[in-house]
Length: 126
Length: 126
DNA sequence: GTCATCCACAACCGACCGGTTGTAGGTTTG
DNA sequence: CAAACCTACAACCGGTCGGTTGTGGATGAC
Image 1 (tube, rainbow over the protein chains, first blue to last red):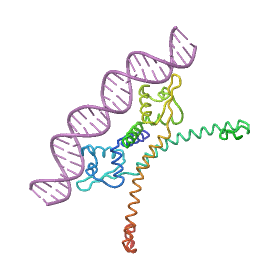
Image 2: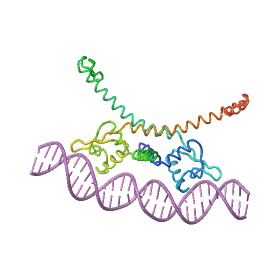
Image 3: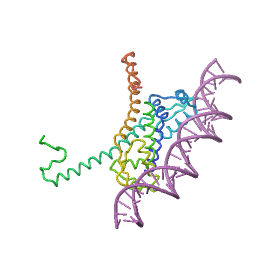
Image 4: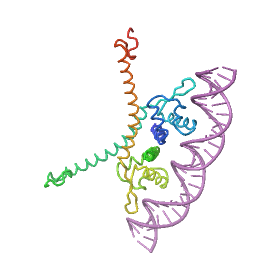
């Protein structure tokens, strides 16, 4: 279960670690695009673009639907948001550390006499 | 210049695409850790952890400082935030598309008589 | 000084990545 | 129908990745 979350996170970050894939994702977030129309933007083979789209699809960052002979890709804004959320949680760990330091400081202030300035009003004499 | 931004984004997403590296980053965001103390948390060689730390350092997600015989790693919350910002920008592209659709809809509403239901109240007779 | 600890670096290995070419099948279009 | 187009997939190739072992050099503890 946790394993699967990690798998998904691995896949999403990996999918985002290529500039061509990020560009493709940007385009399909704006609107549905066929694989060939996407491929026309890049100086690589159609097969290469197909593979990039497949990587993004496996990561859940886009979905595809078949319309006649073409396969239309649409970006999934929710999954992009969920990756951003992972990073926010990471950064939150850091913020908690800061608040923990605050706790230590106020504990210090508790044990110390009230006259001792609690480190955020350093030299009031100025 | 744009190239360098892409290089950096590639490196950061790549660094984040491994669960061990994400865990290391979590730990060094809480507080400085030596490479060996980090390595004790994982069932892999010290050299492997060294390499993971090096990848995170090259991506700018952590920095190191030498203290005696040990090398202490500290997470860089700003760089984590900057990656989150990239994703927010991506998602913003999607939101702009939505607002563009809103524009189209209101333009339609302008040209159509007010009585014509604007496609989101399909059959009121029900 | 001796010994344990921490780190760096090189070499190697199997697996995966990003890209190519080639082949083939389904769908429009004329 | 034939021709053009869009996609799928297999096979291959050089390079990178994640991991290992081995060697060696600083630094700290006794």
